[in-house]
Image (cartoon, rainbow over all chains, first blue to last red):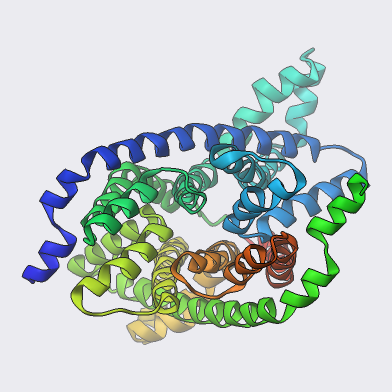
Length: 223
Length: 226
């Protein structure tokens, strides 16, 4: 027990590593602030494009989305970070993370938003257009608000996944929370900084998980 | 070399690909084994937890919710790294394969429990009461009346979640599991050519694209019946 406490819950070691952990936390927040909006914007764009009546375009978009849903995000990230420099495209850790997350999470967001837009009855479009709203206004004021409300649990759930996924940036030497905790662990040969990182993620995301649990249990009503 | 030739030389270099095909094929087999273990144990544990939760014991339900929340909130890579680098301090050093398997199976179990539980909740109370009053026991009611309906609702989200978590096998490359990504990365550093990564990405597509397509089918098929 003592061995467990001293190697996993060692307050002194965590305190000594506080600067590293804090900097890691700040970088993780930066990654979240980049990855979530990029994914949402890319996903919205893909979802809107897939409204096109052109069949072949819809098919190509579906292939694109499925491609990035089938590829593990870490593989994508390693490819962007370690592969593209051979083509003369050196993006660095932060740039690579941004590109990989844009490709990966926009595919997931696109699927969710498309389902949301599909769930808004056709008559809403027609009514809004015939009352004089332009196509863009119809989308922004009538369709999207209802679409987002209908798929809110999925949007929150995917955002949670994107936030957790930022931890893979440690693999390309981006000094985010996990990377810094791992640095501290390898210097001290003590796992407490890793436990601290896990606790920080838990504190950050637990409210979101609780919220999600409520949203999800309220929804599946049988008609 | 023209730009196109340079591109082919870098990313689709047949000589390099032929050289690393065997090791990536070995990584592919290991990934399949790891994925199968994760799916089987994760789904079984998730189902078991959902059934335990339906017993209605407050203590048990609280413990299950705590477990689920923990594994939904902490990134799997953090847990894998914690197990792999932390446990040796206690004189116990599981391989990276075991760490990846255990963590991803627990994460899948947590998500599966939530999804199946939501399915069980959606079965109207009257169904329980009707089944019990015809003389079926608790478990018979669960098995013959409630779960068939609950699982029908759960199947689409469960498939999607299973795929998303199984893709996490790539995280094993961080803790020295020689699965596809690890083999491909090793190939890149030995050959100074990124073609093994292209091959690795293709291997993942071969593995997961059929699963994604299957998930789409399941989604469409079960969407109607709600």
